[in-house]
Image 1 (cartoon, rainbow, N blue to C red):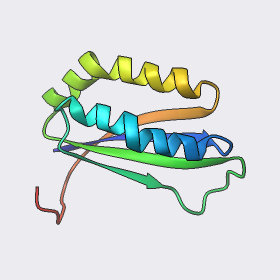
Image 2 (spheres, helix red, strand yellow; image 1 turned 180 degrees about the vertical axis):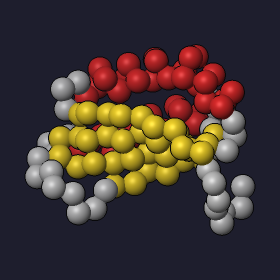
Image 3 (tube, helix red, strand yellow; image 1 turned 60 degrees about the horizontal axis):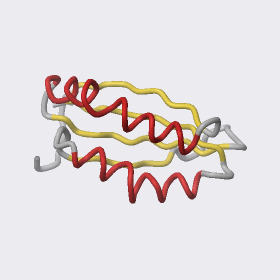
Image 4 (cartoon, rainbow, N blue to C red; image 1 turned 180 degrees about the horizontal axis):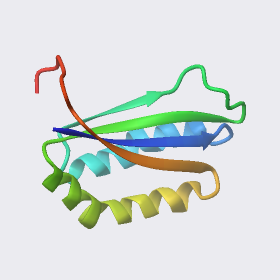
Length: 106
């Protein structure tokens, strides 16, 4: 299993709207692709940015085939919607991590 991690630094003046949009629209749209098992949305605590908040969304994916399919078939359109809505108000980077161990029932 893998974690697809998206880290977003979002400007303070839109971060509450961004969180609501992520919870109500974007994350449900990502999950509806059927490529991911679960997700977590987290806020970074104790960072040095005074004009922004930092969030991570971690999507649990069964295997690389599902992740690659998401990145090829679904990701570009969903990322474009995010960019159009919050253009100039965020910075994003994505990472993939192999899940080594966990204590959750999957």
